Image (tube, rainbow, N blue to C red; front, side, top):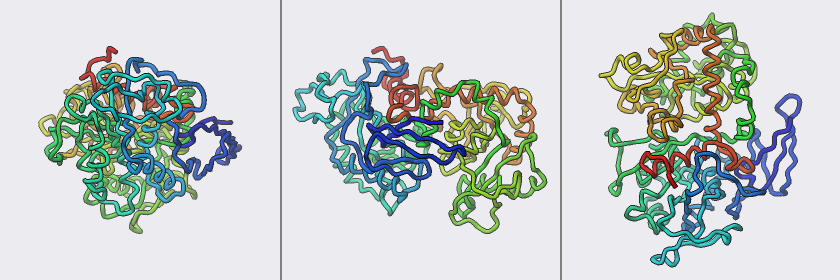
Length: 534
């Protein structure tokens, strides 16, 4: 089977992968002679393209829900050391495996998708700023100048997450990047960032929000991996120059070619629940370490202890084997549960995404922040996420019944629909950092980030475990006895999976995907929660 795709850093190239019979080996033919590096099925090119256009063929069309009247402008006066140079350096680092951290890649694909989008404006009519823009890109000359008041959005092309990640001397909150550098080379260059136009600016801070530099964490309107902050969180460290701000949560970027939008959209909806599953659940984990005892990862340790103590004689869940496998090494102790000790015996390290696609359930237990890449990876693979549920409001101890939230760990056979506008459910923590689902995941139901009929009802497919890790096994055992319910969840998951993948190369701007959903959310936000009228 051949899969045609072109990733974000394979601009104006067509790459054909021909997979071997084992589904793992492959060879490639490329229409481009550029230097391409292939490592673990991830492909990168060792240069940043100079053209604004990502596509090699005809102009893209707008996906549904993006109005033709919408126009945005990308600042072109930022110094290259804060834009193209960062992108080039980070791509080189990923390509050579000098950097293996996967969580901060979204800004690369988002910036390239903005640059190639048909709603982009290259010229602004503004008599007050004669030096307002420079023309770049092959298509720039064909773009008529647009009056300033007709520009809906100003995009700041500073890839903040990538910039923070580049430094070998990482400091919390990106404090290794000097305030004066961000101020003078980014913020001071934004000619239109003033008055009412401030709210029309978009910053690309696609990292966990607490890792962003204080200068940018609560500035204007920004993209983030979450959670979104607001005045209700007393522990937010606001910068002195902060004004009103709004966080728009976007998914992490998965650069596996098999999860590009063309592949996701080509799956028949029925395949999401008819695809054969070999395992009841799959859980990959790193080594335990001292950090687990003092942060939210402790629940991962609790789960491993629960398995070691109470699952010793368990080989099957609902008649199927399960995968519990240790990966990587981050300073763990010798007491870690080794891969294959429980459930199906295994002697090799599984390809995680492949194993996810062969599993019914995939636990995504709390990490360092409410959102995590694993949650979106398992969805793209068709595996139902399993989360722990915490009540973040002590005055609403019975919210799971009164608010209609689904309690999958107690109501095995009666799967009600979570439908509360004031749901206090968190999948992260019960303390003051217990950000709700609405504030932790992109476009969640009741988050007011899209029209209500466009928001994502995560509760319709995610398995929620109340009462701690001890309830994971009985909940999954009961669900495995209810295939109708499993198929319903798989179907609901399949309906929204397309919104968690970013189209790149020939997939750019062709399908509904994470980028089109993000643009729709930005437009909705710009119009204060009202549908865009043009």
